Image (cartoon, rainbow, N blue to C red; front, side, top):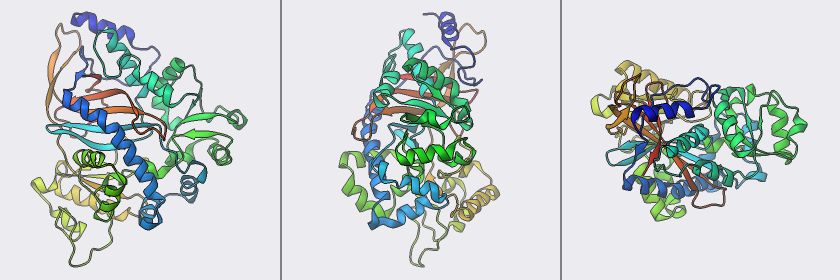
Length: 425
């Protein structure tokens, strides 16, 4: 199909009435191609991440490592902590996993693990649309829809105002699945009785969600079932740093299959919990070789190739708003964000991770009314979507979304001048 025909098809296929809440991105006539090694790695990651998340859930309740739950729970309201510990869903896990993967020169780097991700409807639509163009997208034209339906066989959707940007794609997805989309401000609590619901609202937003208190009481009594489970502790970036904690090395080795452990060690960047507690005079932070976080303020050049992130229970923990790249800041700014991380530890812990640079690739983009697509130097974030119930060890890979950003961007996320594409093998 010629470029003009391809672009016309993409435009014609794009759902009406602001499917993606007025979001814009650059169109491309081609899906993003992944090499065989990357596809294999992504397929293997699903089982490894499922076992990692299950191990995190077990560790949280493990009294032999009680310091972990104390760390994870700090700053959270008592109600939220109690919900996470409820016996009714003690072993429940999120049924959809989406890691954010930076495509690097030697594989992929996991920057986040999201169990309440947006983009499910978007990726399903992209897969369907590019498949109609004859492109062999990962998951096929209906892989996202079928995998979601298998993981959530009866669930309707409930979505908050705060997640309003995702309402259009959720409506589209619900229509495909013949499900209902419910809004907390439009319903009477009795309408929820006996329902199973896919929860699309953040637990840190509970104070702003209409009918939240009654919905939570109904969940506690078993009158309504939410998935993902009401476990704020599983939605923390802290786990990615705890994976590298020397105090937990034996736990991960004993709990994870060696193949999963090796794969996660390859893909999770080394990280630290930014805890202001002083170290003994004979100790240093691994790999940093410093005794206090204040020493890090004077880092320069390559030593500052680090990423500081707010962990989870905060409205700044999504959309890259709480992410700071050391070498992209001035010395003064770097010192300020370190101080912010230290002073907010008891309310909103931060993690520090080694910075991994996404490699530069060339991908064709279509601009305006040009007759040919132009190759654009880009860096890529990959978002595979894995679906499966808690007892499923190897969740289904429904599809992979590529966010293809201009090469000069340090933080890779959806933006107007990026391409949003499905992936092909």
